[in-house]
Image 1 (cartoon, rainbow, N blue to C red):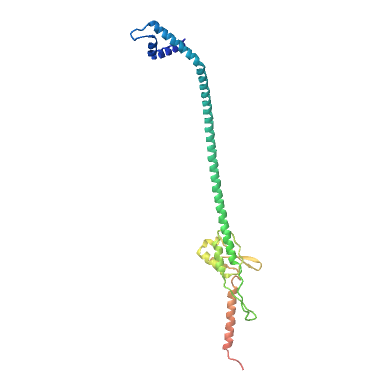
Image 2 (spheres, rainbow, N blue to C red):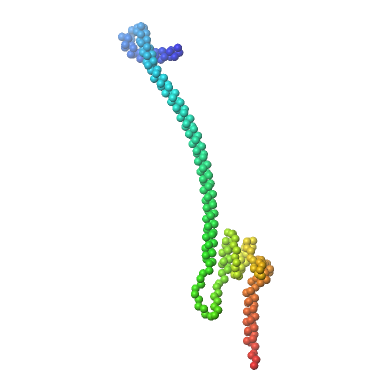
Amino acid sequence: MDKQREEFEECDAVFWDSRPFWKAKYFSCDAMIDPTHMIQARTEFRLGWQAAQTARQPEIDRLASDKDELNDLAEKQDQQLSAANQRNKELEATLNQVRSTYNQIIAEDTATRNEYLDEIAKLEERIRVADAEEPKLLPPVTMEKALTVLMQTDDGDNEAERYLANIDDGCAFVVTKSEMFFHQLRLSVAKNPDLTNKISVLFYQNGEYKKVGLGYKDELRWPTGFLEGAWSMEIEISKVREAILKNADQPKKN
């Protein structure tokens, strides 16, 4: 009943809005309004209105059904959109984690690569030094006498300097007879006493190794025979020369 009343009220509202049309149809002038004609007009309009409403009902029902379907579809789309947004957030978080891991790996690889490059550079420098130390062929020389001796400069001090320059890069074992090498070590220790903790000198004699110190006080404890050859030879040369001169100054006996 309430629905029918609402329809009648809606019908009456439309009827009165269209009153000029019905006045022109049923009434000859504004002064004469016949209630019978008014009732007839309202009844006719109401019947037409109901017929129109009945004819439109299937369309209204279809539109209502379509509206429900659209609402359901919109709700499903909202759910799908929400799920897609959630997946995008998860994918973005995963992507950020992958990027972070990738950057960390790149940083570690770069550090490792730089370490390898440093090691390669040190090895190349050692190879260069080793190549420079390889014996070079001497130019031709004329044999003037039965025993011809070619002397060369003792560059042991330069060789010692090269080893000292790389003393913190690794370990080295050197076998040498160069006195200049040893004296350069003594000079370096005099300039930097901390080098005594990094350098060890051994003197091989009579089947055993004897330690040789590089400090000033260590000179008094050098092993017997260490660096004495040249000095002993110099003394011997001096004695021979003095004896020759002494004999030359003595008068010859008849």
